[in-house]
Image 1 (cartoon, rainbow, N blue to C red):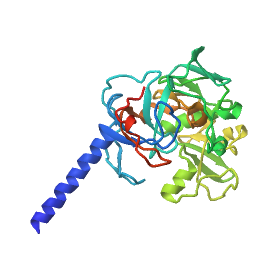
Image 2 (tube, rainbow, N blue to C red; image 1 turned 90 degrees about the vertical axis):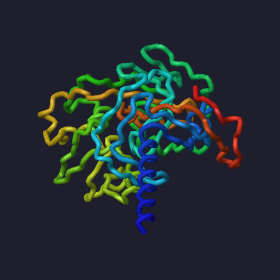
Image 3 (cartoon, rainbow, N blue to C red; image 1 turned 135 degrees about the vertical axis):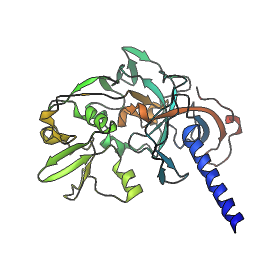
Image 4 (cartoon, one colour; image 1 turned 120 degrees about the horizontal axis):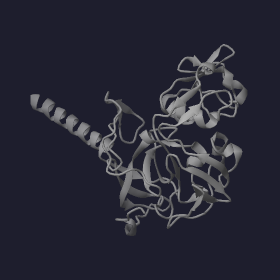
Length: 324
């Protein structure tokens, strides 16, 4: 019996070590969408490096193939990086609206850059950023147009035209008042772990960047204020909800202070702008905004296997492909 218990302990320890390595050193990904074609194909299975931008000490360890996580109780910390994120890098990062999901996109804009989109052409610091090798404009049936209802940046344009914006960087001072560009600023305040609340009509709603559908999928929590059926029992609200209007800003509280007592805020981290190479079929920063630095995980290194998700046949020629 003692031998069996010892074997179970050894197996449990081995599983913990493997999960820790998975969360800190290397990661295996399968690409479910065509947003990076033709550089990375739908069905490519990638080996990703988690240490190239500085290994992030995990605050929780995710159980594979599930939405279950175990807290590590370790402080938020990132080890020294081998390199900084550069414009043009293909980057693996946590989806800003649900960190269960890992996304692979190309970094187009760096902290402090200006960026605009005019007739599909992307301009960074007033210079056109050309499509990378293998990139394409290719509309694909099945693109979820309903996602536009939840966007941040498309309210004043569309995916092919976005007025000039500046990508936030650490140390920037942003003004906090009733005239602020709240669609940009509120998500950043939340990313930086500020408590932002809307106190109105005897109801307190706490802002969250988590997608309400993903939140419900994981927790069965329907307490997100809904655009279509506002609930008096709601406890949460998303910054991008169309129900949120400028006239409500006077009812905002930030870290328990009314907005009238908060004049400015200094950003604590850098932010990045990510886009897919297949620009007509990519849900990216045009829809959900900036990617915080603490969401950056690493880079895909190599394709170790690939399968056509339509025919389920292997694509052996893809093995060994290095993303550009």
